[in-house]
Length: 530
Image 1: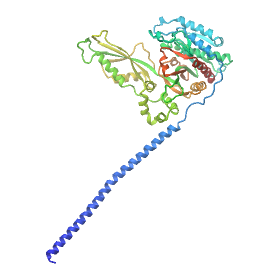
Image 2 (image 1 turned 180 degrees about the vertical axis):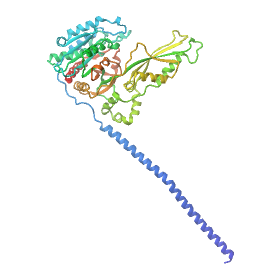
Image 3 (image 1 turned 60 degrees about the vertical axis):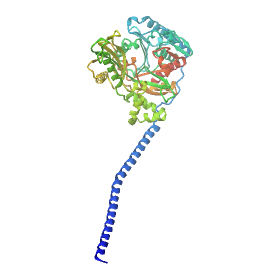
């Protein structure tokens, strides 16, 4: 082989070695790159697996909480028999309804004779009560009965109701199936104003005491029956005067029970059984006046914005930015008590409010009835502007009513309104002459009053679910916070969804059978309190 051939062969060998080396290098580099890219993917995979396991564990915890949440209902036990003529009790309620004890804003228009007539009728209908109990007329029209107990060392209890009723809306009289003050008994119902709110409480309690007296019963603790005459216009002359009288005698009650919540049927979605709600507290109340003042003038040359537009924008901002929803206090206790009685989906959420409260708030805020339990509500009620259709108002006025959730206050509402409106052209002030009330204190769920009421409900309506709640309106019991350890708000009135419009509305009525439950409930409550 020549030198040239050797050289060629050497180059060829070098070239082959170089290719092999290059191929080996590429494979090494590829392997190294593959190793580097595998590590992040491996870490990501482990993270996803960990996340999946965590979510699975969380789901198991939520499900376990829902499945193991125990019912908070007391065992249902039959109440002791009470001799009661339901038909006669219904007749007594019907007679009370015929007295037009209507509360009106103008005191001069109130019929004092109607209250005197009712007082006289009560004496005639309940002779044992008036022979045994001490009756006092307070501030001319309210009544306070004292049933002396055998054991003076025990704290008394106070059962409340009110004798006054709201007026019938003018022009709606013809819509009543029975005249509103006829006290007609027909179709198994007692018809008329006061059959729901709240002569049924007055007559129901007196019927109960009359029946207990007939059976020879004397309570171990003193029982007060307190009946105001002006609850529908604030209770300033009735309930307040009774409270002042009790306070002057150093009376401190174990508990007070007044009207408030009822026995609902078919209103709470997912629950077919009757649900009896006991109010632990009631909302506060304030109305704020919004006044916008800008340039008035002729409507043919309107500025932008107009006075009415400024005010309308302020109201819209308030409605779009309500005070925050909170699941706490009575609302939290309500949903926690109802959770074990509900279908699984609802139970899953309500048994895990520690995590799922944002979902619960979103769902509950979708209904006005449940939204009102969660927050201080905002309700524009009065709008005033121009006196003529072609005159721009220089001044426009609105009134916005707020029902204040416990935990909020009048001051926090005012601060919220000013912050949301944020417009120097709109003046915000408390409505002069309007009701101003802070939220009530929250009574103890484990107090003797709640337990006695809860037990009585389960004894009279064994298939009911009993739960604490929040009263959205106002009651006379607000005045009694200073003379009682606990204040509770409940009436054994059965109410379906279609009955809600009867409250303060047309065709108010109570069934004869349900009114019998009223009487038996009050009698059993007095027994339970002993």
